[in-house]
Every structure is written in structure tokens, then in C-alpha cells.
Length: 103
Image (cartoon, rainbow, N blue to C red; front, side, top):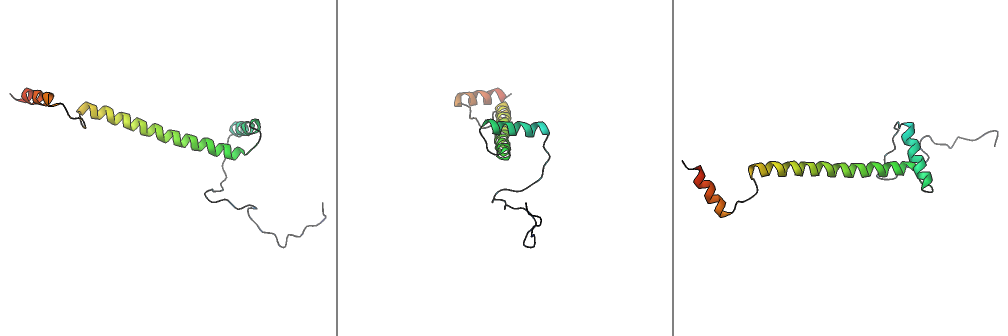
């Protein structure tokens, strides 16, 4: 180690630039969550716990969007079936319905 270092040409800020499509943030993660991701990466033979966390968040995001869409479709099908909207009745049933409405 040197006794003195010359920082006259030094720059403040991040050493590495953030790649396109990524944003540098600071977040607080519970210790047990962080420890779990680090252990998983170590078990896998190395890598980045941050990438593992990003992948897990992306999988959750994609699956939760799908669940919401499926739930909305199910509710709409149930409601539309209740009012028979979107389904044409066979001609024989249409005639039966008309005759049953008349006094």
C-alpha cells in the first residue's frame, strides 16, 4: 500500500455505468430474504443474488398479471351466462321464449 494516493484525476459517483434498461436504486431488504437469495446463488455455483431477485420479481409479476386476467375472464363468463349475453339460442328455443312472454 502506498503512503499517499493521487486523487486529483478522480471522479465522484459510480465506478460502473448502469446498463440500458436498468435503474440503480437503494432498497431495504429483510436480512432473511437477502440471506436466502445469497444461499441460493451459492448453491447454484455462483452468480448474482441481485439477478436472482430480479428474476423472481419478474416471474411473480408475470404470473400475477395472468391470475388477474384469468379471474376477470371467469367473472365475466359467469355474469354473461347469467344474462345469456353473447350466446344465441337455437331457433326452437327462441320461439318458445316468445310464446311464453305473451299474455
